[in-house]
Image (tube, rainbow, N blue to C red; front, top):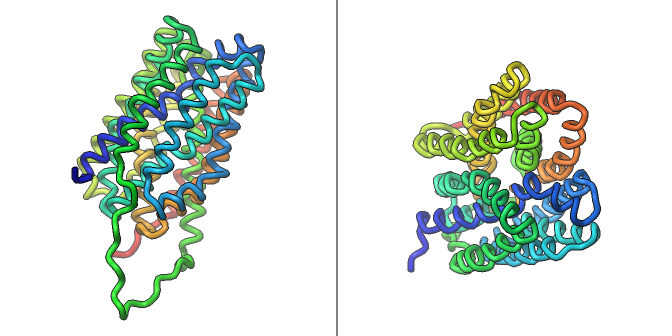
Length: 387
């Protein structure tokens, strides 16, 4: 069967939904029962989750280089096995040490199996035409929070947090793994350069370093916000006076908002440069945070919608902007290097945000909004390449 962009989008859309729901979106619902059951603080669980995220920064460039050389199938397949092993480990953990070790295994799965690797795989198969496929994958996986938070909460209520982890492990083995095994074994062949073509150098072109620094700064801020919101959005809304049911309901709006923003981007993908999409994405969070700080619980739904829409666009920009500014050569490794600061901030963000929420939820929001303003400034300094 021919491997088409449509098939790639459907396959990775499903597996990314499972991957994010069973990793990034797990602590918001299960951290408290996990902590109580194994004898550690909730903050300690988030610290273990942060350590898992840190592994992405350490291993990202190397995994990205592997995708450039061998395609996306090897790391993505490995990720399904790592997720399943880590989730089973969580389910049988009886001590803090076992719980932390299980989160580290999940962290390795996140490094090998989430968006950056999926995007690099799409570029290895479809080259510069991958932007539309990147958007398509994020359209489907945008429902990870909408599915993950309520489903995990329901499973925890019905069969306990350990049972919920086992269900997600089974989904990785029974759904994600077979889908990943159906992916192409190697990158698509590239045309050989003409015999008289000048040699291609991997040295950065003039201005590339400054572009990378500005992009990395903006990406890092948005990644920190996304990591903190993924882990804390319902508890954050609770701290601001929103009831538990209303908080989950508002948080569930994030997924549809992400998808709506991505549909708009998908419709305009050939007309709007990803740099423009990035600036719009960054601007949405401080607007939503300002509404929530000013009006309190009544602004929970607008905040969730603005955050979701901005995060939805940013996810596409994270894959499309490096492709637009630097091209497909060494894309996987470049994306891995570019996102090292993002991974570092992602790693500490849930833990630091938890501490800030304990002191003042409004202060936590204000700090994140200020960071968004700085990220917006960094993207303003970037320029589209000359036509």
